[in-house]
Length: 252
Image (cartoon, rainbow, N blue to C red; front, side, top):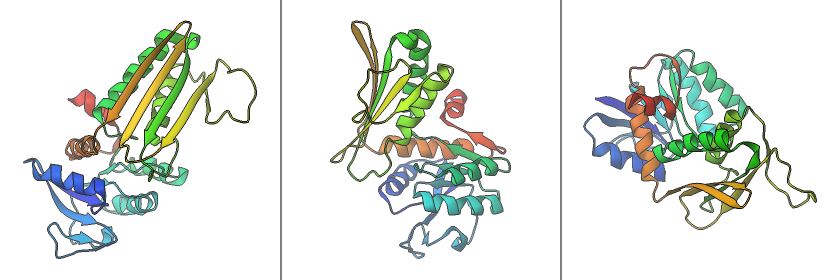
């Protein structure tokens, strides 16, 4: 039984995680971390990681960039494996996570959906097959409360395709002030924010007389929560290292 602590437990994703874990027999929530502390609740919720009376097997972080940065130090001190689901991290925190992976297991993905990660693999294949003859545009849509733009998932998809091409592309986020024809090495990234859209990502490969579209649409946050729980169970007992959805998909 994998003992899990959830940072951001009172948020929508934290609550989704609790619902899913309650239905499983291979893991359990032993503590939550949230500013609204409820130490007498079940599971108990503490205001900080340092207040937890015991160290869990794995920490799932679905919080904020600032909270994630604080969690890195705790995980380093206690050699605690962590599944990082928070996006919009600054370069310093990203570097700290890389260092943390030298002493404990770190699982990080810009998107915890199995479908999105399959989409990334298909996009890599498309770039290798189509080459520069097809212009690439990435369009992502999210709810009006999402702060970072473009989304971490859109950037992940762009990075996967750019790596597959041998880093032949430059990202272009806004063309309104540029009056010139599209360069063959451009990859456009576009963000839409509105309503309660959970998450939609579309990749257009625009070639001579045809357009190929790869897309993924999340109907609920459960797909991300399910991926995070699977990642936590996968990570338990793993040695130091930086793990991703690719590792988990290969394992399965």
